[in-house]
Image (cartoon, rainbow, N blue to C red; front, side, top):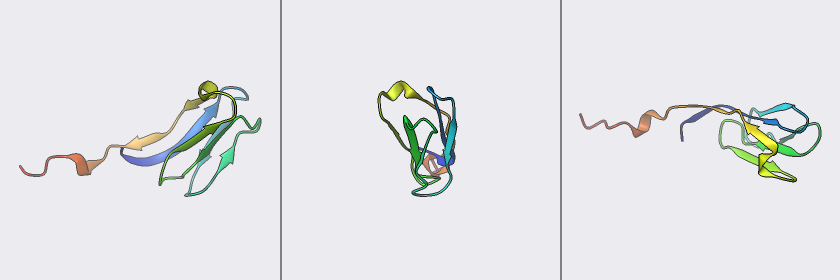
Length: 71
């Protein structure tokens, strides 16, 4: 997993896009069916009915630490 640049999802029921911008920044969409949490520290999603209730929109940068540096 790379560095989290944007931690966000779109609710497929109400259409609202929600973003968590800091650790423990827990946000529900306006209809209350999905939530996002974690900011730039971790990705946490939840739903009240079904996992297909949201669309993933997060953006991550590639992790440079996984490169082979023995060259």
